[in-house]
Amino acid sequence: MVPHLITALTGPINELEQRVLDSMPAIERWFRLEWMEHTPPFYSSVDIRNAGFKLSPVDTNLFPSSWQNLTAEMLPLAVQAAMAAIEKICPEARNLMLIPENGKPGSLYLANLVQLQRIFNMAGLNVRLGSIDPAIKQNTTFELPNGETVTLEPVLRGKRRLGLKNFDPCTILLNNDLVAGVPGILEEVFEQYLLPPLQAAWPTRRMSTHFKCYEEVAKRLGKLMGVDPWLINPLFEKCEAVLLDQPDRLDCLSAQVDLLLARVRRKYKEYGIKEKPFVVVKADHGTHALGIVTVRDAKDMQGLCEQARTLTEGRNKPLLPHDFMVQEGVLTQERVNDAVAEPVIYTMDRYVVGGFYRVHAGRGVDEALNAPGSDYVPLAFEHSTLLPQPGSKPGASVPNRFYMYGVVGRLAMLAASYELEATDPEAEIYA
Image (cartoon, rainbow, N blue to C red):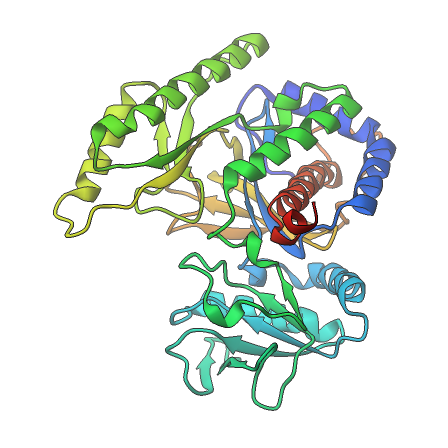
């Protein structure tokens, strides 16, 4: 089934779906040519919002977890993509070391590690889990509710290589976004493949850079399909070095919120959209204690200031300056069992390998769903996202809807490849 849209404005999204289907050969050729010149991120997940009049990504994760939510039917796609990715990087690879997040893992994250281990094992690799958490000083085994076990081993550092006891990997896969900083143990690793590269981690990465790259590729794809790129692209602005404990330093955020709301209002007027526009304020890199704040008009900025004041009161140390992004809010008008839902697309190498709906019964259409209380419903991938059904009525075909999701997900993946090239420290040396 295709989750229904509660909005009456299904016309524009159906028209977009038809344009995507009509342009399918040109779209696939365009992606093929792009991948001849650009290297896709090793893996990623893309959060997509379908407003009924607009379909666009709102977040791209280059260290995706939650792989356990991909169903057994999706597993062959992931294994084939893993084979293709490893063959490109290190065809003779035998051993892969997977580095998980630091801290005591919960059962869901452990299930994610089991799934990743399963995928790469089936792709022909010996897989072991190496922890860089200082608290893991010896092999530590965790048991999952279903009886499966996961063993974390402390990573050993040689002069130029990383490994485990009696295990020398060719490839090291990070499932850790290094939000606390890049530890010395991961620096100057010259003889092994470290995936994703360190510039994909939050100490270097900025979401505004990613969405600037996404804006570029969305314009090109929009021109190819003959549609306004705004229909697949969220507008954004950014503010650097914001000090939340100094109200006068919030002027940048206020100005960017006003500017972006005005831009979105103009687009809503152009398309006759009656919904009230909104923006979200969120950290440009990593996460921030402020969380994700929804702002609908200038008056809401007072609420943001109060949140900032509450956050900073009574602290022994002042909050450090932080970069923020102001992003166009995209409604999600999709429903699964009457709960608000958004599709999340998973990719590996240049392929869409599956996904799920993130569902939250306690959240509204203009709120972030990646929050405690969310649930996950697998996408009905009876058909690959690359096998649409031309001729089917727009809005009624599962393969067609998921193909459209896959196009937007791959567009975000392409933007990530541009982003990683732009931030590659080696590229600066040889430029």
